[in-house]
Image (tube, rainbow, N blue to C red; front, side, top):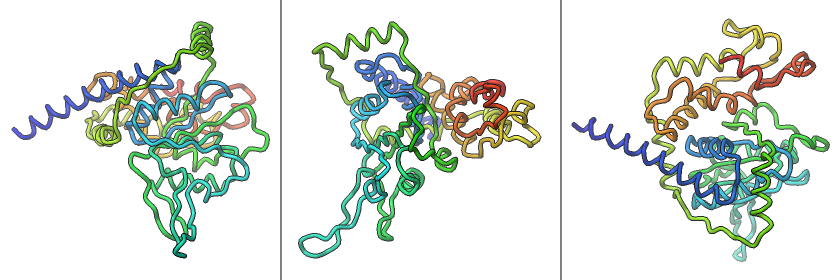
Length: 324
């Protein structure tokens, strides 16, 4: 009897998650016009307890999107503008001498629920590494003392793909810490008309808090409880395995155009992302379509194309779609 009750309550919880997602999208839609897939993917990574990297040219409302999501989620939000002179202590915090001549830890901007790391590739590797520890360990170490970050903790980093002069490209090890790599594209003509109308008038929108920090932590635990069929899990692992050149599952296209493939973390994120995609779609267990729906966001930044692929104009998307 207890199991049946637990199952029933889990089903109701998944229904509540799907409803929360719909409410979030509706509320975010008051400010963010279009970009439906981007909003959906960011929410999936948040509910899956992962971090996201937003890649797009300036002026596509990357920063506005993140601050809007933070507002409707009723979470503490901090924005860090990454620059070449930014030091690790500028983001983690530092020890300061107080009036009583005791060292006191002064928290940096990483001590928030949602951290927007704006133009993350503009800062030196030392500061990128400090952010890496925070993303992976959910804590920072200052003067040998470990300080736990608040829960939930979610990093949304942005990157400009066109201006690469004077930047420090993120190493593969750090890229792998991001659950999703989300590209932002220009709005359609109709969407741009709506954007310009909305942003050049005096109309102001009041955003309501939809989901609390406690609910997010509950949903993150719920996603892990969602059952997945063996064949779907095997499909997700096979998809990641196929990206590794020189292995028995690699396709001809992968062997020809890829230098390095995705590691086991990709398989984990494919499964978690598929579970969450299923839940927000009103399903109680993911299928292969759910894995495919989030695969390009999980794999895009985990495969490294070779010179031949670049010369022939073969993109990461081309290769990922060929694996389906």
